[in-house]
Amino acid sequence: MGRGIYELREGDVSLASVAARHRDVAQLIARTVAAGAYEPGPAEVRTIRVGGKRRVVFALGLVDLLVHRVVSDALETAIEPTLSPRLLSYRSGIPWWRGAQDLAAWVREHEGRRDRNGRLQGGLYVLRRDIRSYTDTIPVDDASAVWEMVGRALSPAAPIAPWAWSVVRSVVRPAVLGPRGRPLNRDRGAPTGQPVSCVLFNLYLRELDHELAAVNDGFYARYSDDIAFAHVDHRVAQQAAAAMDAVVARLGLTLNAEKGRDFYLTRAGHASDRWPGANGAQHVPLLGLRVGADGTVGLEPVKAREVVRDSRRRASAAAAASTDRDEAADLACAMVRRALDPGDMQAAARAAPLLRHVVTDRRQLAELDHRIAREVAGVLVGDRSVRAFRTMPPARLRGRHGLPSLVEARNGRRRRRADTGSGAGDRA
Image (cartoon, rainbow, N blue to C red; front, top):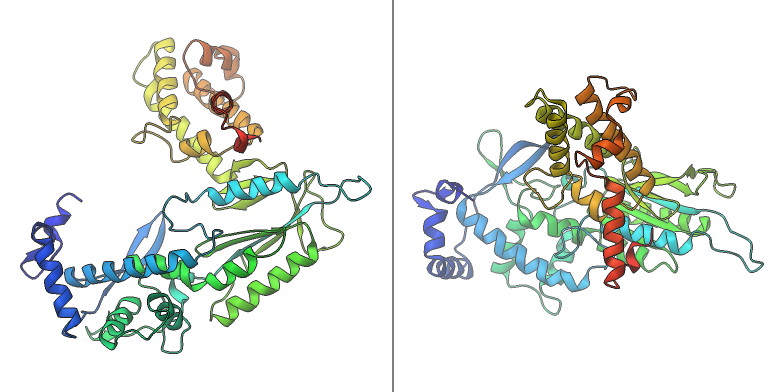
């Protein structure tokens, strides 16, 4: 946290002093809240940039921040047993990329299935849906379904005490400072930037999670506003699409038509005769990854290009430190090796852990190996075309200078898993 623990304060009280006397502070706040004397202040709405996108976040005073954390933790604990195992967002022990791995496993299980006469059946139907502006459009007005969801979660058998319910409402729907400094209540939107927002993202679509996860022989996964469903039968997939429309509309939300896609997944990418509206595809995107019709997981093309560009930048910077070509090659390959090492978190490219532990598409890994080697050779030779390999071939870069191979690293991991008897999940 650094200096923030001293800079975050309310009046003359800093977070550091609260931490030093946390028991006394907790008891004081608890007595104030229980007595009905707690008056939350309005949140300040700020706009920040995250990953190149503008995000609106709610900033709170120190005491309000502590109250929000307590209520959020209580609500998260209450709803956790009621959530579908197919909900993958903001849950302890569940990485964000689990959805792609699970879909790939489902594809491997169903791809190549045969009918009663032993003939291969068709492809797989995969639906992708996204809630439009989910963060900012969850209804929180008095008529919203969120209040019954929250109330039942925190107290299934009896109504919550009025003083406690007032605090809960102020956390779910905090007042915000208006243009003239007056507190205003918003009718839509979770308080982003505060812990309860992620809890609400999981809770509000819980009905949809359970309905689609229960479909026989289907696949379902949701990560916040990102939804995936798959089935072997186009009629079941169409019914699932209708269910999504109905539930989302009933909850006062809207699907993002620009991001919604219906795929017919086959190795050849053929279109479906039974559902012409489903686009023939060899891969389907999911949370920055892609799942192939062969049941492999790969990076989406934009992320793969980022890996190549990052390797070129690092190799170029390292090679510039020496005028001797062999020494420059050693430096460039060492820098790329470090960038692709998932254990070196300070220097690793963002995709490095995915390439080592998640990506199983060896065709893509081999292509990345070729492209990275070509970029490194181009930096050393001064020619970014394939002609650079005449002077600095891949075998030399790997054998003499230590340029890593993503395929070899992945295959080595597979062999280690097989040696320990834990390789069943890494068949692809």
